[in-house]
Length: 268
Image 1 (cartoon, one colour):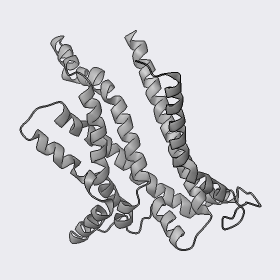
Image 2: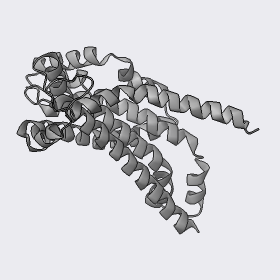
Image 3: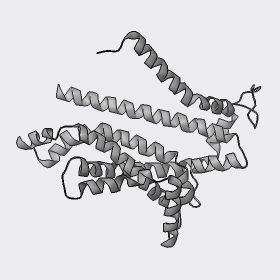
Image 4: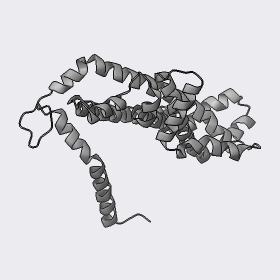
């Protein structure tokens, strides 16, 4: 039974209200990024894009973005690969320690990130590893890879294994089944897991704070500037980061739509 017009209106209004509530703080950040004054005051008397120009030419900002991008990209690639095989391991196959494996692989999600970051820092120090952006990759993977695995597992549980069995009965090889059936059916979950992994790693502060060492990421720099030595580049980089994340989501959705269109055209 479809909802009535009034019910749909209430649901749409509620959805818009929630989105407005969540994104309202970003409005003040956007105003601060275009204020010519060093500190934000209302009403804004003089507007300027000076801080955006400074951000694009700043070597410090370039180094921060490079470090954050390296960590996020490596974490995304490894998380998606491990999530694919990890999700298939407990979502599609029955074996002796399947449930134990599922519980262990999802356990890090429930640890506070601060405690997890401190524990990893102590472990790195105990085995003589100097924290850098590479150790931050390991720390992010401990927390993000289980989340990516859970996302892919949800997709793996949703499609019928009989599709693979039917292809196998018709003589398809394992590689063909993987390429033509398993991978396309799991692709939406893999894309979603990749998006989550990248965005969670890009904006992660607690784990990065303990494990990056001398290599600072963008969230660490923003926090340092907020607690001491405030700079107008803080809201500017905040807006740029949000816009970049939004564009990444739009690109991912567009690629998924394109992939679906190609698959439907081949099927027809």
